Image (cartoon, rainbow, N blue to C red; front, top):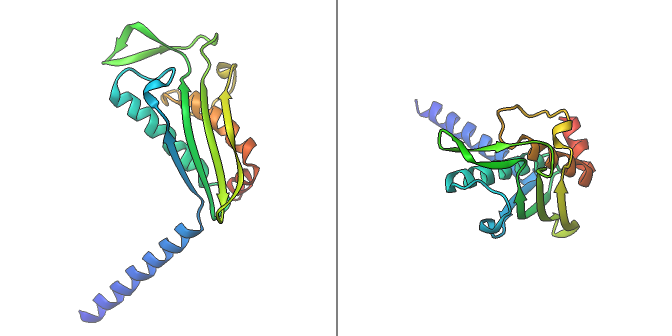
Length: 172
């Protein structure tokens, strides 16, 4: 029994070392929200606002994993205007209803980014993402994804801004 415990402990240590090594090689992404209470268009309820920020953060982190190893991407979101407009007269199950008509209701995100590798800044700047024709694109995200237009817009910006990420994505 003692030998089995030692073998199990060696296996766990080997797995942990492998995970640490792969984490050290993987690109890292952080997302911060600067004064989210002043964003142009966010859901009215605090839980819904948090959900939007969590989903966008997860999406940026997922995209960041396609960057070359040892790169660090910091995203600072300074404003969000979600696709569509909240219909103040209607709610469904306590949730806001967004009406999308393709007029002046396109998604917009303002952000600052900094891409670093080994402490050196490779690229940085302020960006104003927007997609004025968001309803006219084929969208890879499901109709049940409440941020499908924002995610598609972010994808478009990300792979244009960081072409090396696209190469990494195509290899996997």
